[in-house]
Image 1: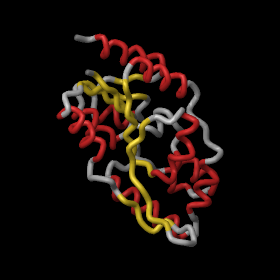
Image 2: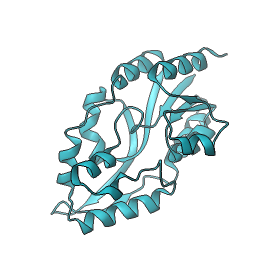
Image 3: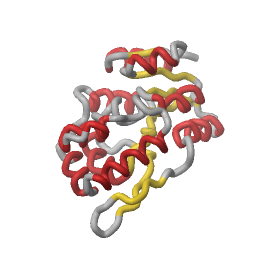
Image 4: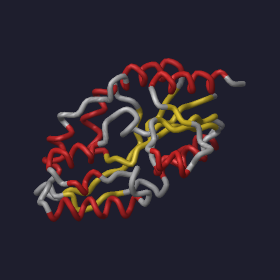
Length: 202
């Protein structure tokens, strides 16, 4: 049996941190896993910036409330769900993603969580498990699933390589350069064509 796994931000949703950066004017918050491959380094930097600027979970949720799925994302996700099962594997946090899941018709999402104090300060991020995307794919394969994986960033490389088949969706040029052997799709039409061909392979 085949199953798809996919990243969330940059694939179906806009990048949350980039939109927070635009809203607050804090340029450093525009950095994502497309720019910094070490997730711990990235998140430590983000939390430091939030503390320095007295930004709380309420401020981030206010930005999240204005976001919608990328154009064509919901139709594409609904199409995938008709063709195959899909699990979203993301390095975002439950507190960020939950309000957006209704806009994607509640797909299954595996991600991380935050520790927030009574004043709304984000004081810690809690990784569910190290390399959770890769580990999830490994577990699915151990359950005899044939896994098709796709994402757009450095933190998706592990799951793409661990999968039976994997490809990029709209990655930055640096990711394509660093991993030239991984196939690339640039539009939802190309993504559907790729998935259809992989699902049809015997």
